[in-house]
Length: 65
Length: 265
Image (cartoon, rainbow over all chains, first blue to last red):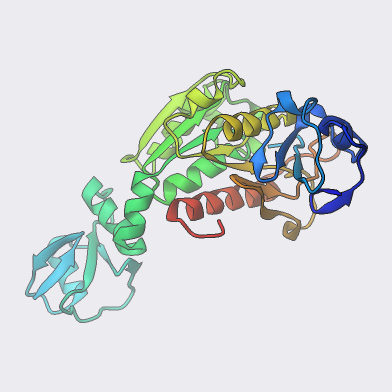
């Protein structure tokens, strides 16, 4: 089991992070992601393979300021 | 007796604070331990007193002494040494910058490519006379009108993922105050991945929701988010001074806590 913002999520072995995030409602250009306490560069979102016990934190940015 | 007068040791023979004021700055006023007094009190050994003219602005030393007395020399020292970058000088950024400057921060780096326009005036700290001016110039002038002694660096340039780290290389903390969601994400990702600096971001500041929905949270190791995290600015759900400034005050407060080393920030 991995967690996204503290909630457990299922994933398929070999699934990349961007695929898992898309299923949990987060996409592409308006997010920042930390995996196990370290920021994951955006270029790696489509490459990083999710592992068991990964703690994933995602922030979705919205316009306005 | 020996007191601290405007930040320096001084030997005085006046018996009361008002007597001291009358001698040094007739018609003026005094603070004792950082607070203005309305009633006279006896002068005591070791008291920290600042005396000001009612009509002249204080000198740099007097101003510094007041801030030290108000906050303690240790806090004053940390604030003076702090260098904070403000990315975006709009509803969030102009207000965060003003608050940090009023609190006596030593150095601000103000970054925005835009000019002031009339639609900004409902929430951004600019005047009608600023319309058409670069925000970097207008905000610098605004800050200098009440804190002329701090350092201000201005960079009137668009921030991209290629230049972000170098634009803020001389800052300890970066306040993310952009309007556009992609830019916000770009800056957070770039600063967190390429540097070891903290980012204090404003996210979800639109609309007329309850003030209590605006929170400060720390979702990542070096990221603080101030806002409700959700409410996006769009037609019918605009940006107003009161609501945006709650979030910008959260950002300024979190930045000051980081500067002072208060944990959790």
